[in-house]
Length: 226
Image 1: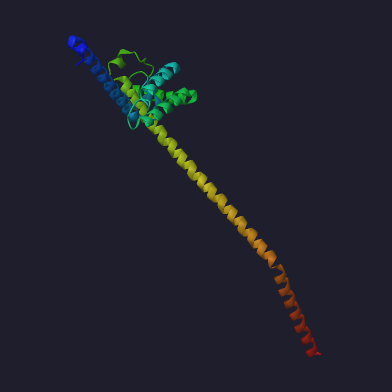
Image 2: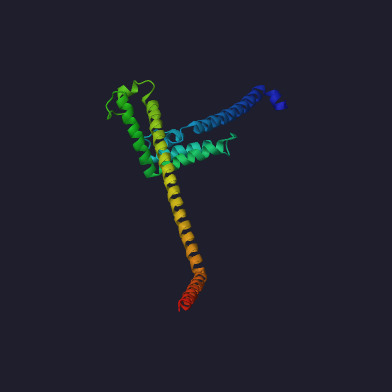
């Protein structure tokens, strides 16, 4: 211990406590970053609102602000979590989809449909406002139920989309196969025509030889009869 610290033990203790607080704060911050990375990785990927963890009613500016906060918080340069780059990419993708008016409008339409289905299942009016006491009294909360209902509808939409893509690929495969067969048939016909043309002289020669032989036989027969 330095002479100054010997003379002022209180100051030494305060300095040690401050260093310990800084260390604990760094560890707490690192832990919180890891927790947020895990949350993003576990979020429902088809719902960008879930990835960014923001309400569907958020404005475009609020979404951008939330994205900036999270992207800085879990940036791979600031956390040692092995999957931080993956979480960062998911966050970026979610913000990009919500920043696209057409994609967000399509997503909101799906969520609206999920909300309608949920309210009907709860025997509540479909035009009920979110601040209605009947929704506030629900358990689990209406928000969590809506997230689950939206998840179910989004999964159904994704299954339909993948089936359509698969069907289109199958149809494209059949069309490609049909075109390939047409090309092969045309090629075979061209080869047959070329072969027929190449053997023309041989066929003509054979016919001439046959005709000449037939004339000789007729002449010999006439001479015998005479």
